[in-house]
Image (cartoon, rainbow, N blue to C red; front, side, top):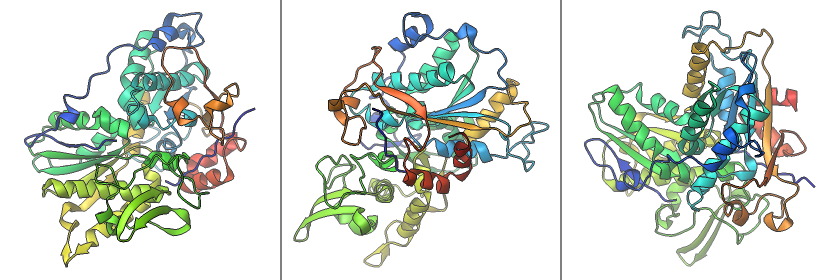
Length: 485
C-alpha cells in the first residue's frame, strides 16, 4: 500500500548576531563547527559497488546540453525558485549578454524537480541532534538528480540543505570527476541583499529562516564574508529569527497545522505561549493581529491571563515570526532601521502578501499615542527572495560551461516527490500515512535502509487543494508540471 501525502501550500532557538564594528554573539561563532568530515554515503556512492547508492560516474553522459536542470528542496518551497527560473528574463538568448530580450532565459531548458516531502522539515534535524542524517538526506536528494534523473547542473532550492549540504555535494562532484556544478540559494540571497547598498552606510539586515539554517550561521558567515569582499565601510547588524513551524505549516505538516481541527490537539509542535525566546508573548497579541477565523488559532485563557496558544494557519506563523523578529530588534536598543529581511526559506515567499501586510501594520502600530515600530523599519524596506539571483547564477554557470540547451522546443518540467516506503510498518507512520515524528528524527546515517521512495508528482499523491494553490501561487511552474503529470 502506498500512502498518500496530504500537502498543503499557503504560503529553535533564536539568535541575534551583530556583526562588524558592533559585536557578534557566540551563537554564530564558537558554537558552530565546520562540517568537514566525509559522511559514509559518499564513499558508498563513489566506490562501494555492492551498495544500492553506488554510481558509476564514468558512464555519466558526456553530451549534456540536452540534459535537464536538476532542482531539489525539502518540500514544495523550491517551486518558488523553479518559478523564477522559468520566468527569468535577464539575458539576451541570442548573445548571452545580460540584457532582457522579452524571451525567458530558460525557455528551452528541461527541469527535474524533487521535493523530499516525506523527510521534511529539514530544519528540525539539527535540533534533534541528527545533523549527520540530514547531510545524508541532502546527498541522496542530489544523487536522485545525478543517478536516476541525470542533470547537467544541480540547484539546491532549500536554504537548510544549502547550509548543511552544499559542501558535501561539491566535494562529491569534485571526486566523481563529473564536472557538474552545484548552486545554493544562500550566496544568492546575500548578494541580492548587499550588492545594491551604499558601501559607506550602516544597515540592519533581518534573516528569517528555519531553525536549522539559523543554527548553522550560514547567513551570518556569508553576509560577513561578502561584506568584506565588497569593501563595506559601514556597520551591518544581522537580526535572526528561526521560523519554527513556518515551513512545516506551508507544507501541511499535521504537527504544526491541521485545518480539519475544531479544537486544540495534543501533538502540536509549533510556538507556544510563554516568556522564552520563540514563544508567543501575551503582551504582543494585539501586535501579532492573528487571524482567528475558521480554526486558524486556538487559545486558552484564565481570566485575563493567556495560558495556551496554538497557531493553525501558515498566515499566523508568518505573522508570529515577523513580529518576533522586529520586536527582538526593538528590545536590542539598536536604532538603525531594518533595510532588508532575507526570506531564508523557499517556503516563505508563499506568504509574501501576509508578510507585507504585517510590515504595514507595524509601521502604523501605536501604543499610548506613540509609534512603536515605525522608525525601526526603513522607508525603502524590502523582503529579499534569493530566487532571482539563484536563476542568474545558474544561467551564468551553464553559459560559461557552454551547456545551455540548443533545442528549439519549449522545455518541460518533470516533478517528483518522496513518500514513505510501502514496506514500512504501521508503527512508523502517522494515521495519514506520513512518517511519524519519532521515527523520522530517530534514524541514523550509514545504513542501506530505504525508508522512502520517490514517485512522480501526480493526483495520486497530491490533493486537489494543493494543486489549486500551486496553480495560483506558482502558475508557470504548475502549468508545466501538469503537462507531464
